[in-house]
Length: 137
Image 1 (tube, rainbow, N blue to C red):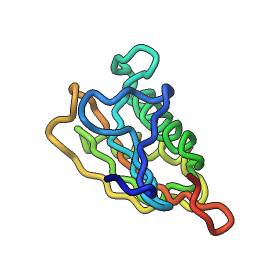
Image 2 (cartoon, helix red, strand yellow):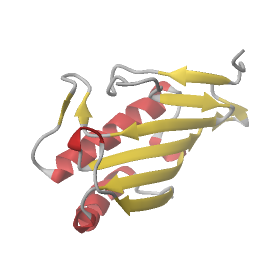
Image 3 (cartoon, helix red, strand yellow):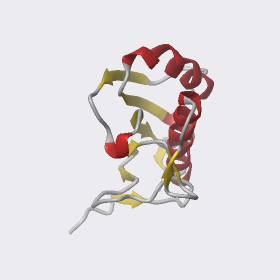
Image 4 (cartoon, one colour):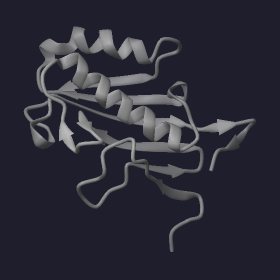
């Protein structure tokens, strides 16, 4: 039996899961967002071309999942970033800073040899979704 305090979230504004996982899971006041790659949810295809556009697509996917769970990007407390090329670090930071302007979340960023579907970037996140000292559910 699954706890009533744990539930999956889903939005059509982020890519559909391609395996046995949820876009996000709310556990109490925490929202755990599965790794997002630059897939356009309308087409199901990877965004091609400019690395900045790829990072924006990933962050828009994360934002959509946070919002369907009742939160805002400002509620994100931890982000883990996977880059296939650490040389993109500065470009990544430029785009990332557009989304997290005030009180940016804690973050880890690592270079990896490969990502699903050959993506250049993947982001997973944790958000604390609480309003007036109560969990949003």
